[in-house]
Amino acid sequence: VVGGQPLLEDKRIVASRDQVSCSLGVDAAILNLKNGVYYGLNGVGARIWHLLQAPRTFGELHDILSAEYEVEPAQLESDIRELLGRLAENHLVETCE
Amino acid sequence: VTVVGCEQPGALTRARQEYFVYGVAVESDFSLPLPRSGGAALTRIQLRSAAPSFFSTAIEGVPLEPVSGSWYELARLANGSTYVRWKPVGEFIVSADGGSVFCRGFNVSTQESFQVYLLGHALSYALVKRGFEPLHATVVVVEGQGVAFLGRSGFGKSSLAASFLGSGHSILTDDLLLFQIDAAGILAYPGPPRIKLYPEAARRFLPNTAQGVPMNPETEKLILPLEHVRTCRKAIPLRAIYSLVAPENVQDGSSIELQRLPPRQVFLELVRGAFNVRVRDAGRLERQLHETARLVNLVPVKRLAFPRVWTRLPEVHEAIMSDLRNV
Image (cartoon, rainbow over all chains, first blue to last red; front, side, top):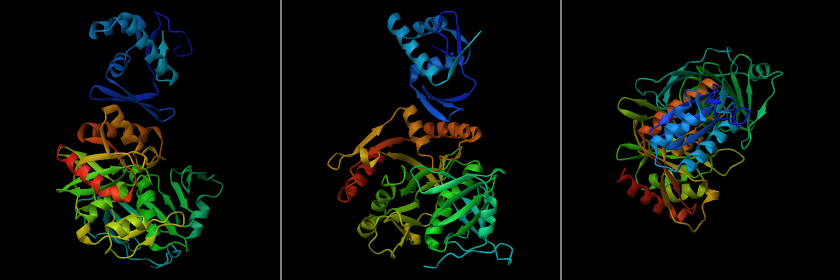
């Protein structure tokens, strides 16, 4: 669920406006400006975060990442869903039309 | 030991003196045990004595926020100033721009104790408001460079630093580290020439130092002035940061562990190690994010776990010295 709505294949997801982030080499840090909480992302998470600076569908994310990483499609799908879910729980991503 | 009295602002024009601490020029209307020179100042902050009525008027009708895990109280005033009070020690108002700190020591407080809170937590509000990001760290000098021990109160920063003092190293700052990043790297600035120690650490590592003054009624810690030879009075490059693991997470019989961390964890350790975590407006937090990210990329940071057993501190000291040879 992202932005209170089920994650549908055609919904676009983007980094929330109420955050700022920075690169830490391959990793990244995010600050939620609404509650002042900081988050750290590992290299793959940071790559997904970077992609989410522009609106993307789940399918677009999957296609880009499957070309970049050697990973089973099912595993990749599960990992992307898990990360998006955690980002959404912490109000760091939202859906857009 | 002299007792800090209540001053009447404006009753007399007192001579103002300039001091240097953390690379900042501090212009004060009362005397402080700080150097009178310090080179080009990073910024200027005025310290002014004020009467009880100045504070009572300022906080009239403003709710005081108790600070969890601490014994100080805080109020955010409508004009952007911040009021902080430590009940047995004193009260302070830091102006919205951080350029002025108004202060009053309570009669039960010693001058030394008052100065610790003034030049520590109270001044940290001014420093943050003036755009700095001080860390909660004690820094010792090793081969002309700073080695910082990062951690909250009670994590053993000063005791570990005392073990370095005991073997001939000097100290740059105890508790509050102000740093600046420039093209040459990270410069760490000298704090007040004193250290706060438990009596056991003072007896073990500084047996010839003048007797300390109790810091506050809540702790056994003593404030010990340090002679010139035991302090470093100039800004020096920061070589490494060791983030101390909380004592409750380390068993007495466990080994000393130094752990390299991935950048995202270094980032979170440094954010947790901010000296002032009470100023939380979006502008400050955003600046802290970017300043911390720069620090992550410029200085080695490791997590250090060690048993809090006095007799093992020299072993911790040795482990750090050995690790530094590889930094």
